[in-house]
Length: 284
Image (cartoon, rainbow, N blue to C red):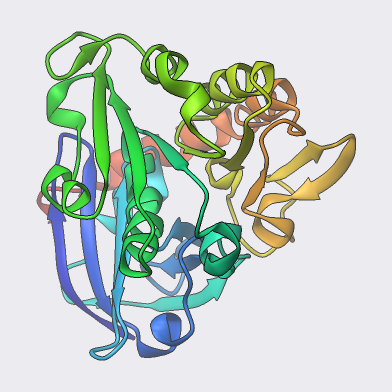
């Protein structure tokens, strides 16, 4: 069992959880993920590492309630059954900082994609790199951890669909105006957002890294749910990634795969509701 220090709601559907998990953070590098299990009979939930304190052994994750398993995670108050990690490959820039010292880097974050973007930007900031960020969400109250990300970026621009904060429009609208300034782009967020960012950067021959963590279900390579096509070859996000060359990912196939378990997920969520499991009040 792993001690939970915090599990609090930070937006309408997103939560911040802090866990004492020394082994999981000991060798962690931004870009990697962990697997959480709320209870012994729970499903495995792969989540990108949001933050960590290696001295205290504290792991932080941000998760969005999108189905039955993440809804169950909201009910955890004191102890988590399992934490496994770090898993997957680290971000290639963070893994070889010296190689990118003189590069101009832009990060694009969409929604809760800011959670995996933050540790990477912070890591690069701590190693002397100046990184710009474009952060987009549907509306202002879904822009998370603004205070933390603003402390580690060089420049940050915001975009909201409804214009409630920053530029009204898409992250690509902002990127297109200054795309020629950069040598490399990292885009993390909804698959559809990463697709449009990659299409834009490909036109400008701007190297682009994307994270296919939205496809992951089991996180071990056994379920096959995160299989994607990269450069015409099959790859598993949890084993070979989660980050890939955005210009080589078949995003249309990835978008189709995201709907594979929709019916099963709906059935489980309906069952949980009947049993009275509620993220705000626990089990009634």
